[in-house]
Length: 344
Image (tube, rainbow, N blue to C red; front, side, top):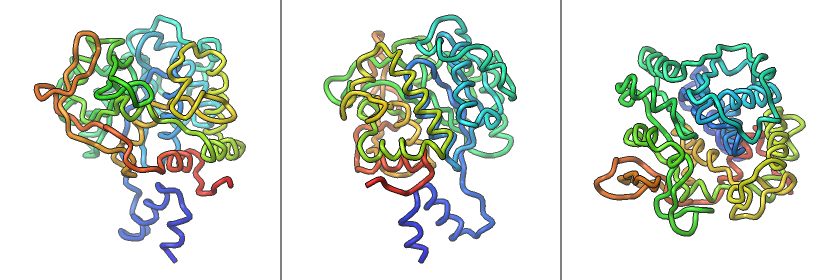
């Protein structure tokens, strides 16, 4: 009977039930604390990644840092999305990164009044906020993942201020391009999160534990029956409704060809997602052990032009190098919709 129940559940829900069965009904679902460093407000993939984090019972999201240029505007967009998703009160702290000036493509979608509605703690010392979260995880003796989905100025500042945090927290980064580039194919290229802020990258990447490069992230896209399931579940799942609303608004504003033209076809609000680089990175968190991505121990160096080069003299880390098995789209859609139903 248990096996039958598990087969009809989303992967993450089945894992939770199995854990409770093995360790007792009163056992808590294993969770990981996460500090999210994001440049939400330009490419929509950050919002897909955040949606997955918000929907997972295995993620304890302690802090969101809006990083890169225009960090103030990014916080506005973040707050509006959280409000639309019904999650505004569930994020305890938003920290605005050091580069507050600059425009993002979603500036006309959100404004300061959205951030004014945030009931949690709003901070302008992002580096210190990150350090405090690491200190708290050490004190509470729980693991912490710093999820870097941006050019990472705030994370670099935290490491420079308190180098010891790299020994107490793991860093998972979406960045770089090892053997392949656009759409997970073709030659490697200088990826944005790395090349946009080389000084910060040189501080952060020596301490990256797990890397999600374009080799895998560039091929992450949702379409077909899985995307139709998202459309179907949005009326009962506020996070998905907010995600698709922001996605539609982004499509009207996005000037970049690469994320709009993924390996499965052009981005379309009724048919498929854009390339969801950062969503691929989220599913590499240790609580999501679906085995969809082939991992390899590599050594990576940064060149002055922003290329990430696999070379023995580089920094050691675990990198996603290729997609290993199907099912990733189904997994993430079940996570987002919190359902196992399939649209025929």
